[in-house]
Length: 177
Image (spheres, helix red, strand yellow):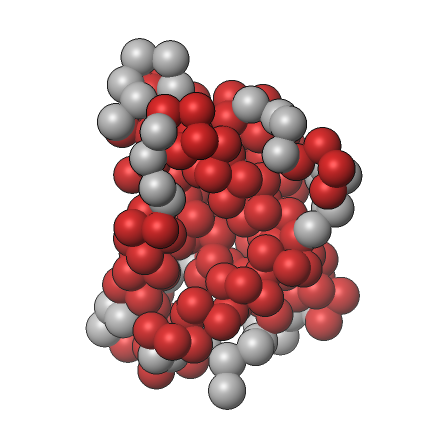
């Protein structure tokens, strides 16, 4: 059974709580808290790239195992939390620099996570975690291209990436209940 199978029952309120939990778990993972607010959006996105590579490797290990090792699941959750934190801070910095509020985009991220989790059971069982990582990578690539040319496209792509990363975090952490 896919690690995503149990996510279809997660309520919108629970997604919000899980997002906050992932943000807290990712604090200080890639950058110190004191520097988080000073770093530009493009730098935060760049800092997330190595984490996305590691997420891909961990997801492939989980996908290949019939019963993933708890250490691998913990590493996947930890890495996902770190990437989620960086991308969340990139969204906040981009909003600050461009004069928009990010609350609606965070709701979009939660909706994207919920939509990924609500695909039919047949599709969930066929959807490996590595595919979720690829969705996040595609969104972050779109962010990187949009940062200096399409400031209106950045928050939507960041929200899409945040939704995918949240799904990875929840699937790996096993925090649904």
